[in-house]
Structure formats: structure tokens, C-alpha cells
Length: 117
Image (tube, rainbow, N blue to C red; front, side):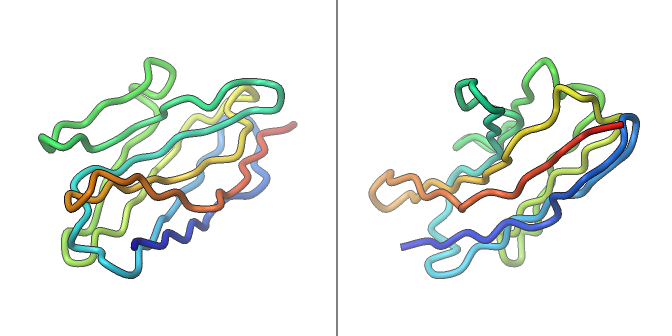
């Protein structure tokens, strides 16, 4: 089992920045892929950025050039630096981690990001 705890969300003005964190616990070295998704009110959950099983980085087109995903390889903590935030970035951001052992995907509870003037 892998547990994930996100933090770093909050209220920010357009153009501002936030840094989200996702700290895993449990079988943290079983993580083979991990990333960030978000869900805005009334919309489907969508990928923001991720490290794939092949250690490639994928970004949503809306995130490219503004968001940066990174991780601490010592404990597989995951981060999302978000710059130049827009009103449409308002959402609950959740991190996921996939276990190599059985392919299961684990989710955190999410952290809310509100971009408002």
C-alpha cells in the first residue's frame, strides 16, 4: 500500500505561483509512475503532469511552460511548481502513484487551488 499526502494549495491571484507537494508513505520504493491530476468543478479529472513508467515527463498542453513537475528520488516526494496561474487553473489537484508490484494506482485526497482576483 502507498499513502499520499498533498499540501500547498490555497488562494492566489492570477499571475501568482504555488508549489504543491505530495509526500508518499508506505511502500514508497514500489512507485513506478507518479503525477498530478486536477478536477475543476463540473469537469472531468485531467492530467496536469506526470513521470511515466519509463521516467518520461508528460505535461498537459495547458501546463507546458508554466508548471514544472519534480521529485525527490530519496523518498519519491513529488512537487508541482505552478507559475503564471490563471483563473482556469482553479481545481482540486491530486497526486497519484502507481505500484510496480501489482500496477495498482493510489490517490491522495487532493489539495484545492483557487485562482481569483
